[in-house]
Length: 102
Image (cartoon, rainbow, N blue to C red; front, top):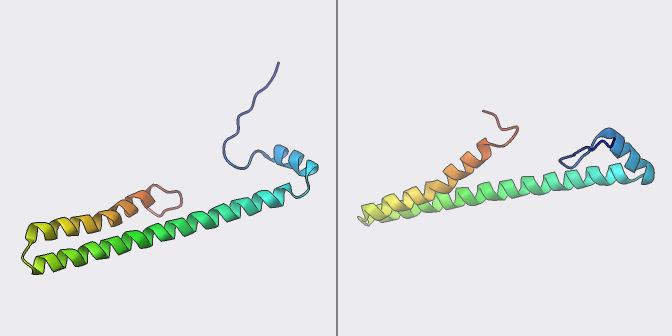
């Protein structure tokens, strides 16, 4: 009888890692370096996304204030809503992530 095992994710069970480490002594170090590089890249992308959302939000609020001063109230409301929507979407997207305080 054959026994099948299914693995998901980057790191498998310890016996497989130790088996592969026996074949290639640098396997564990390369996997850990790859994980660390991936985490650095993900954090950098998250920070850039937050900066971009903040910039769009501030620009929308500024344009909305400018349009309100010009007497274009409907356009001002649209600009403000369009400006705060990236911020709201960024907050909602970050709420579902692991490790985010609730």
